Image (cartoon, rainbow, N blue to C red; front, side, top):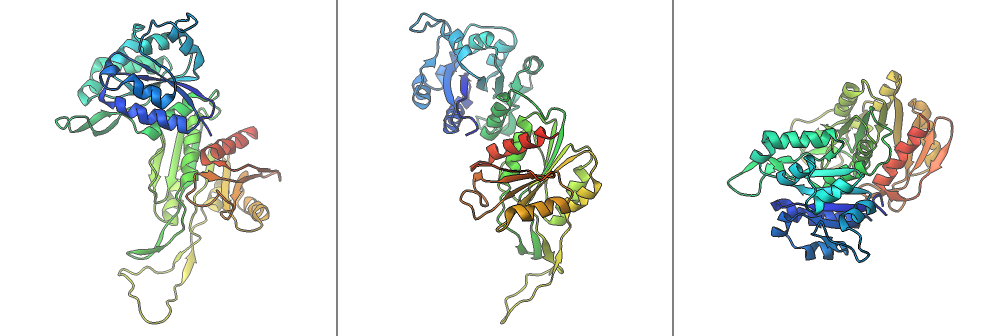
Length: 400
């Protein structure tokens, strides 16, 4: 698990979004992290320490000046225990205290003593978020190297407020920001990464189509890993999917192979690493009916034509970019992938067999082999798709 063995301090401040920090805590623990919670005085009005103690299986810090059983000051001890500090939610008041050097309650005192990556997750009503002094404080924290997970636009706590900016960022984005903060190195810093993901759909009438079961999970996790490793810009060209948008990723939705071909060409300029993980349809109907085709007695014959070969087209335009392709094979995986690597001018190709346990469409895991242009083959064990994504980028970076 990608968070396995990581130690995370979760600071909770006094806002209505405090209840969402319970969900964050549970997800971090599910992913293998150890979590301790510290609470501002205001947060005690919204949720009890007992809740966090039960969920974390650790004591909860509510007093900045408490001593441990060994007469150590708790906030100093805790600041040295963790790998990262996450403040979720971070109210306007807590942001102000941290930005202006206060250290008079558990969260600000621990942060003052820490030399760790710090992730701040603001949550408040729109008027407070847009206040000049709040924005100044957020800017101060960002300039000091804090990781700020910008709040989203959406429904706010009270019905009178309606919708606006200030809603706590979605859980997936907060987890991605924590993942990025935990990275010791940022080897993709300054790089542009272009990724394709998911299936394409080729309609033969207004309601029916040719497609495949790809969900896009592998490509989406590749974009998450690229952000975590410091990429300056990540563009994700993706087919139809129900997956949430990854954090800090430019989303380019498409439907057909022709759409994906056009979008990939449009965004290719300046790309440093191209990763083509999409399951693109090889064929489409030669003609498309403007009306639903009615069922009639007997067989239906449909003429198909080849779709655009996106990898081949970009391979012909290749200059400085590293090209990584994907191959889904049900037999002779290595030989078929090696032939595709040569044919499409790739630097690497990642191959898997959907018949292998845990490696099929829609799963949270994958088992792949990575081939390079020199003939090397590296087989990876079954792992989460996010772990596989990190390994793919690390393999690419070893050769660049």
